[in-house]
Each structure stands twice: as structure tokens, then as C-alpha cells.
Amino acid sequence: MPLPFDRLFVHAKPVVAVLHVGPSPGVMGSAAVDCAVRRAVAEARLLAELGVDGFLMENTHDVPGVPERAMGPEVAAFLTRVAGGVRRGTPRQPLRGRARG
Image (cartoon, rainbow, N blue to C red; front, top):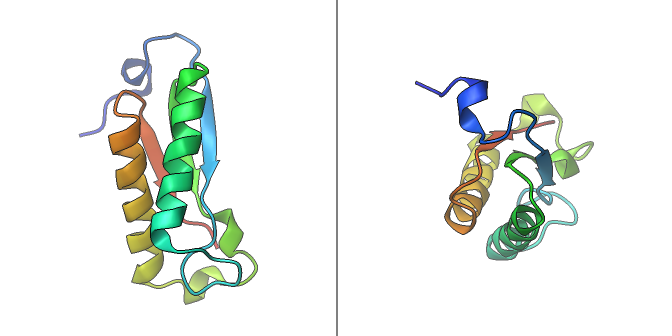
């Protein structure tokens, strides 16, 4: 069961940053999955060092290339892989993700 919002963070008014993950594999402009993971982890670590309390993650770069109705399980797998890297790289910050299309 997820923690209530007020128990996720140390501060009463947390700063939450959005990690805009690059395009999913197969979408124009996409990079290798490992490259996307490294970039997201580096960005999350920098933001954590600057005081960000938590992250939201989304892949807005798939739009308009992949309409939501055409998204398959590969998009969820890609975001899960990136989220796992961010979680390992910034274990103290809460992380939530969302696939957009």
C-alpha cells in the first residue's frame, strides 16, 4: 500500500521535479536504452544534489509519434528499466512514473 503524500517527504512543501525520459525504443529520435537510463540517472542525481525531494517520470517524447492507443508493453518495459536505474541512483527520493501518448 502506498504511503500517504504527507509521509513521503521530509519537508512540508517538497520540491518535485519531472524527469522527461527520451523517446521509447523504435520512436524517431530514440537512443539506446542504456543511454536513456544513464541520462535519466545523471539528471536525477544532479537534481537530488540541488535539493529536489522527489521525482515524477514521463516519456512525453513519444508524442506525436506513438498515439496512446498504439502503445504496447515495450513502452512500460522501457520506463520500468529507466525507473529502476533512477531508483538505484537516487534511493532516498520518491519516484512515480507515467506513460503518455
